[in-house]
Length: 365
Image 1 (cartoon, rainbow, N blue to C red):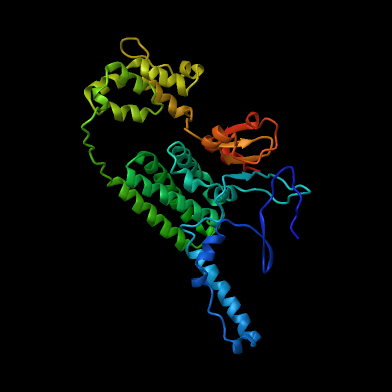
Image 2: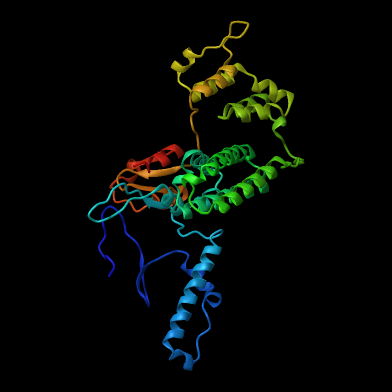
């Protein structure tokens, strides 16, 4: 019998009644039902139904075919497509076990998040951090999901030609990390067959080659361009950038943008945005004229201190419910929906934005 009460710490699972009894509701069940004609064996004749041994063999074969179908199609299917997850760090009387990083990565819908321009950089940075230190802590299903999301990111970059620099850095660190781990395969640091990891490494190298050969076509526009804007508007646009590489790349477009990208005040604002004033004093760099070289200071400071992270949208953590979730801004404005089943009187006061590093730290036990 399922537990019909509602625990105040979690809304619980959704249960459905089947011929085999009560089972947790899974969102991909309808996809399997659509393929029942392919998964199930043909019904036995009336004479064969009397043979119990043949019926058992048929049932086992049907289950095996169904399992093989799911395993072979996990590239495009995910076990969960939820927007929130309960972060449980210890066992209680009502709930046993704890939530892992792999479980959170499986259940949160990162596949749809990469299609949102506000969340794309956030997901890429999270995958980058996992590739550096947490890849071996993921379960087999989570690793498969990780590479599925990574493949969708690469395909998206190859199609729309946006953010190739971020993906190149991610693949470079992931490739070098896998090479080191594969040398230590005797220590059982990798989950799964070593041949699978060899194939994944070859796929990553193939993606790197495709990104290196990526040619961004020149867009021909008959309307107004960035160079047609007044000088002060172009300058204001540069001041909105928080990435030094974007400023340098934009400065290579035209002589006017190059002049604006070398402005001392622009690099001073960038240093003040990413670093503290105490850090300036430790690494003060003066030019030949006696002025502070803010551009050189920025690249010097980023070698010693982490830069400030800025994302259009992030995951949120509810301190009251201990739930990690994606917040839908449209639903929040229209229906005052926080995006998770919160029981607090003022849910907005309990929300905390979660950075990619904070996301990983939530699952350190």
